[in-house]
Image (cartoon, rainbow, N blue to C red):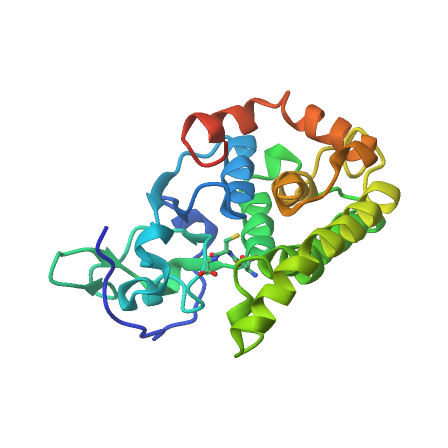
Length: 245
Ligand SMILES: N[C@@H](CCC(=O)N[C@@H](CS)C(=O)NCC(=O)O)C(=O)O
C-alpha cells in the first residue's frame, strides 16, 4: 500500500455524523488495532481494512504520516475524502486527514457514538467512568509496559538499556495482570454482565501477556474473561479477517 505524502491538517472541523459514509481501519495483526476491529464488528458497521506492514516499517514511512503522525496503528478513516480537500499522491490514493481518528480509546468512543444501538457505553455515569478507568489504565500503563519489550529505543539511547527494559517486561506485565485480575473484571466482562468498550481493549492487551512471559495460570479471572470474549461473534469476525490470531 502506498500512502499519500502530506501532513497538512488544514481543517479541524469535525464532519457531522450524517456525513459518515465509510470507515477504513489501518491495522497490523495482533496489535491494539484489533480492539477497534472487534468494536466495529460489535457495532455491526461495515469497514474496509488496510494492513500496515510492520515488517516493511510502513508505519514509519512518510506516506503513513498523513494517516497517523505518531507512526502507530490503529487509525480510522471516517469519511470518504472530499476531492477538494483530499491529498492526491502519485498513486492517486486520496485521503483527507481531517476525517482520520487516532488513539484507540478515542476511536472506540467514536464508534460507540455513531452506533448508539450497540450500547457500548453504559448510560450510568459511574459505570461509564469505571469502564474508562480500565481503558485509561490500559493505554497509560499496561500497553506501555508491553511496549518496553520491543520498543526500548523510544526511552533509552543505549542498547544495553533496551535489554534491561526487555527483561523487566515479564515482571511489569505480571504486576499489571495482578491489578487487572483483582480490580478490573467484575466478571464475566469488565463491568459484569454488561459488555462495554473496555472489553475488547482488555481482551487484546491481556492476549499479549503470555508472550511477555506472564504465567497466566495465576490469573483465573483473566482466563475466564478471555474465554467469555472468545464466545463473541465479533472476536471471530476479526479473527476471520486476520486482524487477531
Ligand atoms: N496510544 C496509541 C498506541 C498505539 C500503538 O502503540 N500501537 C502499536 C501497535 S500495538 C504500534 O503501532 N506500534 C508500531 C511502532 O511502534 O512502530 C493507541 O492507543 O492507539
